[in-house]
Image (cartoon, rainbow, N blue to C red; front, side, top):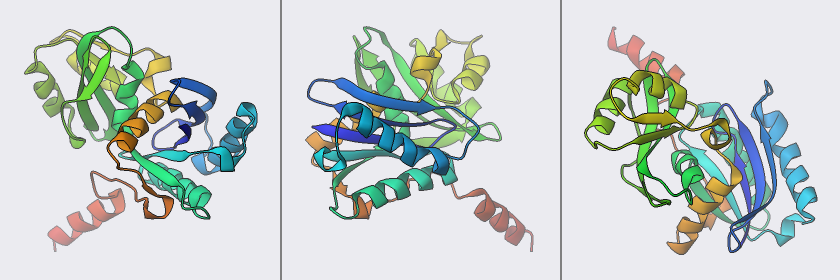
Length: 237
């Protein structure tokens, strides 16, 4: 299966073409630059298709990180995927950003808990834990929003080495390093990359969980800030 992968859910953005049967990234663009993702995602998509020598009608499936993450970023990625797949209603994988992050570690011969963490601000993180057993990554917990302190307590209870991935990895490492055996992944494995998205999408395809592009929806674990502030104001009236 030839996948076009998209991610704009965090501080970075990426697009890629991945052959899931060969577990091979055919082309990839990754950006960590001060531009809005709406400026980068479509040029990157065009670039990876060109680099791979493919046209869009040769793509078997779209795979997009649908959240959690930045509210604006998630919407940009989902809207781009819906627009690209609209005409043909291309089969689409709605991938958890946290699972895509954890899948960066898949295939590395380690035995540890992989904790995917995204900075949700105000000492909060979006997080999910995965077990890496001899290089095979499997999910342990659902995607959740919680405090860094609660995340640390949950990891301590497992009593295993922890590898942090995601844009909240360094933040959580600093909070946890004195109380547990943990490391923050190096930058090439820290952020969402096309192979991680493709591995998560392949699982969805095997579970018959692909959907038409038109049915894609963002996945949020918290209300947007504007709605939270409105509810807080209403509570004091």
